[in-house]
Length: 136
Image (cartoon, rainbow, N blue to C red; front, side, top):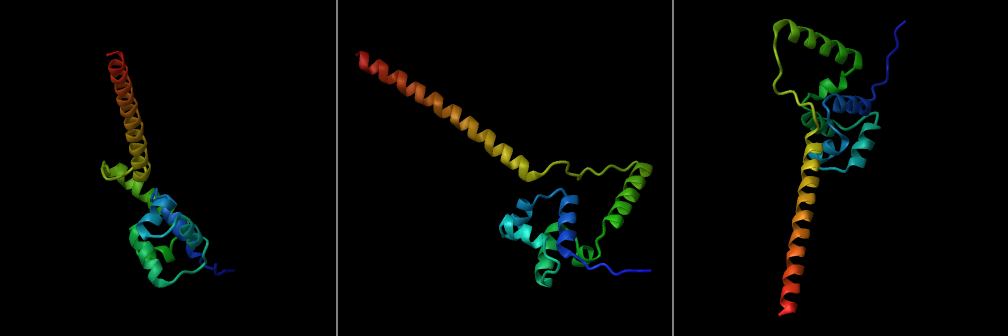
């Protein structure tokens, strides 16, 4: 007995995005839309072909790859890839184990802390110089 599952394109987009290690915010920035719009997109059962092409391009896949995506196929693909990588001794130097957007935010926060420390030091200098001037 075979059943035909209704394709839910939004869930497929969500799973591919997650497998790529991409957050909704990053996808939203690349598409020029809000994070809420990405969330809505991922809840949609169907989307227009033009929008699907844009999403596919950002995710680095084809529209057909999104349409035909299944978790089972992805697991089989990655298992085969992992097995063949080990047997060939290959190493993927381009594999990114962090979200670049998270690293950017960390960098901005570190710069902000540094700026605040420098500003506090300058305020202390000004205060010290004002005290010296008041004594004269």
